Amino acid sequence: MQTTTDVRERLMIRLQHAVRVLRLDRILRVKESTYPFAEYFKGLEKAQTVRKIFGEKTEEVLANLRVGFTWVRSYMWVSGADGHLTISSYYLNNGDKVDIYLDLIHELTHVRQFMEGKELFDANYNYIDRPTELEAYRYAVEEARHLGLSDERICRYLKTEWMSNEDLKRLAKTLGVECVLRSTSLTRV
Ligand SMILES: [Zn+2]
Image 1 (cartoon, rainbow, N blue to C red):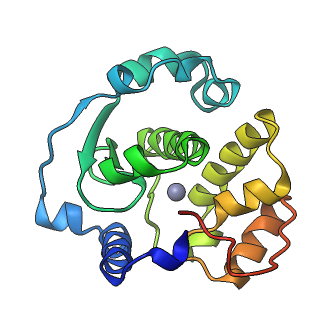
Image 2: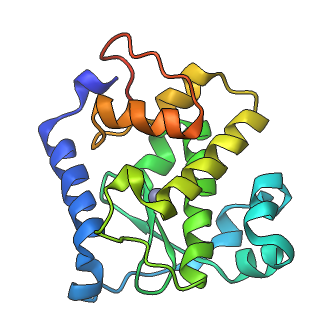
């Protein structure tokens, strides 16, 4: 659980978050190897939520989407430079499968937003107030409900290292998820 998280991992998560916020990937022009998303993640086109996100273009977008893998112990994110997806290999191998699936739904929303020319990392907004994030979270929560997950489980999904309990409460309220914060155990592994 979270208590075993070492300092180094926390630091990497912070660093990764900073990379996203500051768009260092764009500044440093880091080029990573990418692969066809559809080769790694099959069947997503059948998910009702994914079809809602992309509509008639679902198959086409997923067929063209590229994915890269990183050693950085983080989750996943969409490049603000070219719209490809990057996933932490550690997260993919060790993360909770439901969390990973919901994250994919969340990130696919960002893929569509990127295609529409939207600014994914708009610094004018806090993370939990950013319209692009809220839309992505809404689709993830909708899919979670399809899966029959409880509010408690969805709440656990929503909690990330960089989100304070206050932010989590506010985000959950916006998304219509009942979050009862009982203890410090409410954290994703
Ligand atoms: Zn997001």
